[in-house]
Length: 449
Image 1 (cartoon, rainbow, N blue to C red):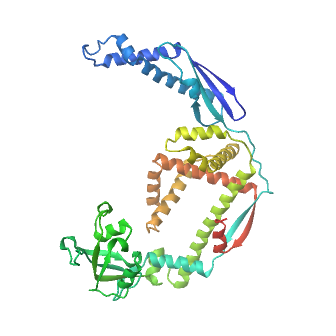
Image 2: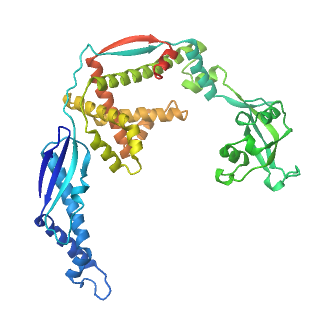
Image 3: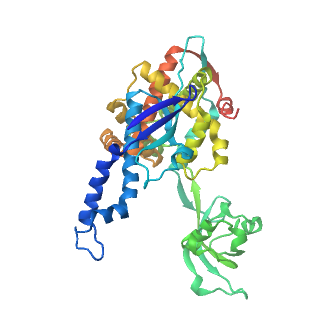
């Protein structure tokens, strides 16, 4: 097999792959002999089918398969040996590759398009500036954090009269055209949230009601969402497609949410028993947590701005037409319109990957297993906190983190995050960072520009 490269320009090339009989014949015969041993064809004993018949039946498909393997391996080796940095994968030029005749040809030539990675330099100095936004803690922010904890550890209490935020428990039954209950449709202990009622007249009928009161309503007008109807009727949402008509809900109990009081019980539930012993200590600890959260948000914005600054500052071309063809070829669900719509975002991400990899290579930045484990622990801790577990032991975090790293997709995602962070930290060492103090509102507005 012989492979040559014809450069179209600095970013595009064609690989010409010449395959001759000696490249594939021996392997094809080996496969066909194995087929002969296993073939079960009517009129012949197992293993006694003539080789010529096997070749006639399977020869072309086996030859094509083996040639594909040889070509794929050959191109891969060629790219490695020639130290080519390519983007995407080689794409066959169908106009050159489709006119082949396996019955008459013994020598073949295939053409493959490749997109070449550009050559460029990343030049950073202290003249490159990126802002660091330090978010000020204000009364509203402190109250928002406090109320989040009060809601998280709040409870439902019985109430005597319905208001808009209540959840009601009771009996629901479908009514006949004459307004009589159809007993077989009755469901006890159903749950109804007043807030999700869409029909304002029905909502007003509920508000002010007491246990024992009954309210009638058209179920479709009152709850357009089928999942809400399914929950109310205690059934799967697939069963409510044809549910309609009037229903009657009889209130048995009114449950009203009450935020947790700011007391020792809340302190213990948030930070662990005995960790905080007064409201002043609690608020100081809350401020520390707010600062840590704000620091993370400020760092996120700084990293994003540093990344964007380097992308905007580092100019180089890309084989755009090749990349569009490659995206369509390798993503069967994509349409040409979708590729065009999202192509600029794709190119920007690709630019960052090329810049990131160059900085990492030039500075010998590597991803160590300990880096992976540390990042997996951070990810695990965040997952635990989403489920309200704030005091997980280190051994428990490590166990879950190691399980995450066993999953190939998670491993790749975490490795990407680690290398991103290390490269951005290197970028921040080379540039000037200007600190600016802003309010929460001003900081949030930065993301709407």
